[in-house]
Image (tube, rainbow, N blue to C red; front, side, top):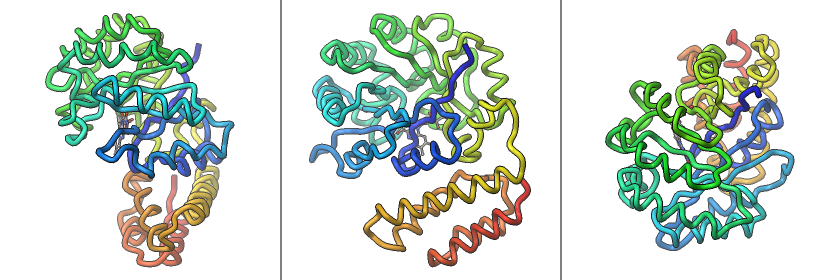
Length: 314
Ligand SMILES: Cc1cc2nc3c(=O)[nH]c(=O)nc-3n(C[C@H](O)[C@H](O)[C@H](O)COP(=O)(O)O)c2cc1C
């Protein structure tokens, strides 16, 4: 079976509006993940609740992701997902953000297999939900995952996604394909590869090297080139004209939808739209890019984006 594409969760980027606009304009993605939902001192963040409640486009498959250190947190978040109508949940065992790691969540739990086991033992309490796990090779060293494999294998997971870095690398440095390969041989669940897939050639190289992959998960590569999944499905690159027209439509839809949903007015919409350019089209002309991110009004911003798209050869 040909590997499918999943859109990685990216806190601050892949919110509900982004996911829905991406699916509508580009597609090529089987499932989208929400950025991780966590419990804070005061409970859930309203922002997170809004994000998972936003289910206008029921035709796209959205998998909410939870991050938890202990069974109680896991139960509260899984119950929330169930209550909001979801029947899938992804468990984050890979986040390297210091705030989460300090709380023993995400990649911060990987050096403690006993705690991972205690956490995953909650899974049978939610027979209505199907779970997947997203993880790294470890926090400090890649060998940490060896003690985690039997725990993963003992649970009925839909799939596992491995990002073959360790937590202390954050998102930098080379991916450890030997580490991925060892996991590929020992994990009994359908497996997704995630990490640094930025071009069609990158995707073909990984799916060629690991032919039993159930799928690939694209993150920053898809933020940078939102047509990448679509191109992979089509088996060919989009033309310059198609890319321009899709980009214009995507951008217009995002501006319209953020305009409807953000209560802070133009200033807030402008700030949100600018964050798109943290990752989108990294190779674009620097001057055109600067004009976009330095624009002071929404009008100025839209004009700068129009000029950038008109004057770029994709
Ligand atoms: C800004 C940012 C936010 C992220 N937020 C999440 C998150 O909420 N949950 C998660 O599992 N991974 C998160 N990740 C990790 C990505 O999902 C992905 O694993 C990572 O970027 C590597 O894949 P890529 O090279 O395709 O981007 C985040 C990464 C970045 C850079």
